[in-house]
Image (tube, rainbow, N blue to C red):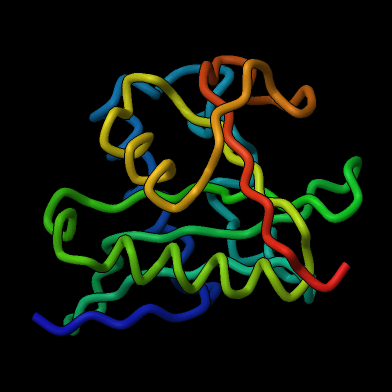
Length: 163
């Protein structure tokens, strides 16, 4: 089935929230201190309206959203963005779509930022290997305090952006 990676639209909010929640449940992330409790989860379209921020969804031919990822500004750290809410349903894992999504996100990020940050869970073994494959380096502690206090793995990647 053909898939399209495109920028999020307001009508996508309920579907991408369901994708994220489904993945969080799968990996035991349905708890406080993680994306599960983010107040913006049901309004992602609105959360990525700034020029230097974007969220993309992976849409099946039948218009079902099966994945997504965003680049958000870390306002307290100049030149730093965060790869946010990158989740894909099992049906598309291993198809190369996650790689296309990551490449889209990093290409966009390089236009505005010099460093990309990620917070995640050690239980997400495949995701951690995926981030490392893209040159993200593990950190011993978070770059900053966020509402995701339950995350136990942090990465950063130098982007060589325009700032």
